[in-house]
Length: 141
Image (cartoon, rainbow, N blue to C red; front, side, top):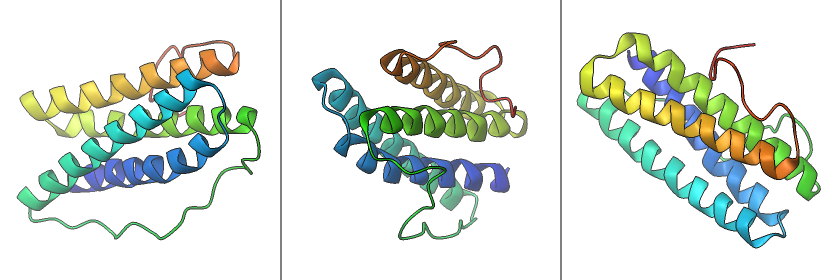
């Protein structure tokens, strides 16, 4: 379970970093608010994971000072693409936590995975992308 929680933590930290960049390229009020809200949720999830890893007496690799992006972000369009990419990645990381957890921890992981899937759908809608949803959110594809 420690590995999966550490991977989810890394995904959450990457999302926090990405939303700082994403927000700079957005120009619609609803999108800017969504980016701020998304970053805040990822910060809360990061803190939750840090606490869980601490309870397990496990440590995670320190967050890097910067991240290598999957593509260059230079416009609203690429910022929205990055938001979708990030949320899909976070969803995938949380999906891997599900099989190694029970009861309340599984509920928290499922909630985090579902939240990221819903957020990815919202970003796809802002971007005008289709399809809006994935058949199996978080499944590697």
